[in-house]
Image 1: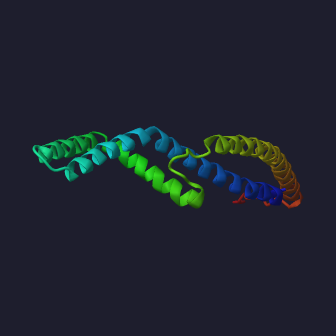
Image 2: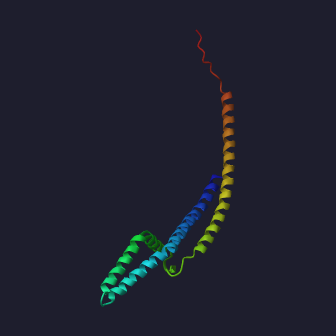
Image 3: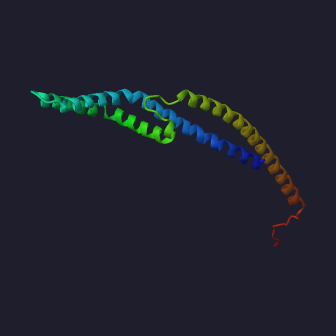
Length: 167
């Protein structure tokens, strides 16, 4: 029975690892989606600065400087969101390797359906585990009862010594 419990635990471990991995995928994907607009806006502002920097003429340097200041202010205001986007993009790029495209969003629905499937499978395995655990508890209680009965019977069969002292 204990061996079966260990087998069930061994079945649960890869499922738990995959669920944790999928949760990470979804979390990073959420950060990627939520903060993409901040990164895009910053890149747009910085691109404006670069185009203005290339221009020549009266006041071109001043316009470029204002564009750079605007880009830097936006970046300092939204640095947390941009950093979260960058981390999520790097994570997803590393994990998904060639299948990751920044223009397309990751397949969150596929991951969520896999989580639902794995959770259902985990619940079935857990139900077997808890049922077996309860059986092991009952068997252990029976074993302890039998040992206590045998021990009591064995003590009754032993001769009792008198501990009295005659004076």
